[in-house]
Image 1 (tube, rainbow, N blue to C red):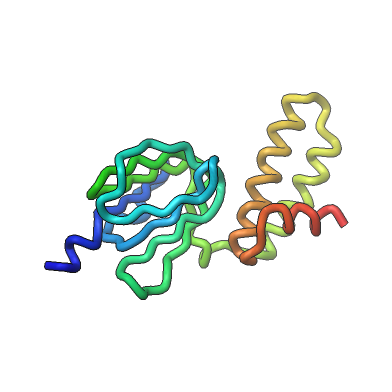
Image 2: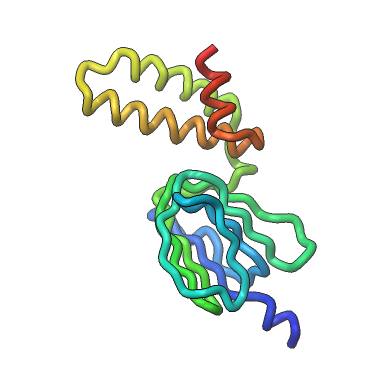
Length: 150
């Protein structure tokens, strides 16, 4: 019974499918004001989420499951946390070579954009790809962006 008091219901949903629906001991979410942790009995809140990694720990002491999300919203109550993600993929399913190739292509697309709207759209796609690479390599987005311009 003590285990129930420490865990809460967690769901992560993307437009494509429900990625997770299980009990969790702790979830760390990349909020726009900084990462924040959620545990059982958390104060109720709704928060915007920036692109980054959501870490889910099913039981105290377990290794986290990591999922890259492209942004979205988190709805937190005392016994429930739901994340509605724009895009979500398990970090272990990311392919470094594909992401690096996409970054290279998108850097060219940003340079060759014909108008400001297209440039911004390509730049946002580039930042998202760089975020995926950061998640995969355990680097900050700043480190990935700095090394991709060399």
